[in-house]
Length: 63
Image (tube, rainbow, N blue to C red):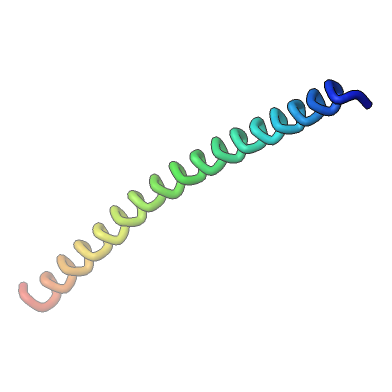
């Protein structure tokens, strides 16, 4: 195998690694977006539940 062939093989290997890293980065970004969305919904549900609990408590004991 000549020096040029070895350089070409190394270049192709590096290109494949870069493509793999780009795919991994894209996947992680999508997962992060999903978690951020779920986190917002979680806060909304917890806040709504707490509000309803306070209203129920007030209705039972205050009026």
